[in-house]
Amino acid sequence: MPEEDLVELKFRLYDGSDIGPFRYSPASTVAMLKERIVAEWPKDKKIAPKGANDIKLINSGKILETNKTVGQCRALFDDLPKSVITMHVVVQPSATKANTEKKVDEPLRKNFCSCSVL
Image (cartoon, rainbow, N blue to C red):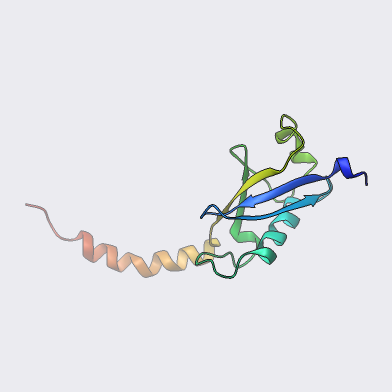
């Protein structure tokens, strides 16, 4: 594959630090990008994804779909000069974990909210 066809991406984390930049072919999927992010995630971060499903990638205000390829997302990149493209990484725990935490917190909220204001 010609070098000019590769897309150079870096991934901005919640604290402003970056993972990358790395070069990807247009055939690379967003799922592959997420797997790379999980593998390269800094060990010293308090918030860390457990797997690729815990990550959302955002570019130009749009959440990238996991089943799309970098080539299919290229429309988002076409207006940019040939340089490193920064994507934002959002870590969201899976729905199962979020539901478990919600159930644990509910009794506390009920007790807290049961007081009346005079």
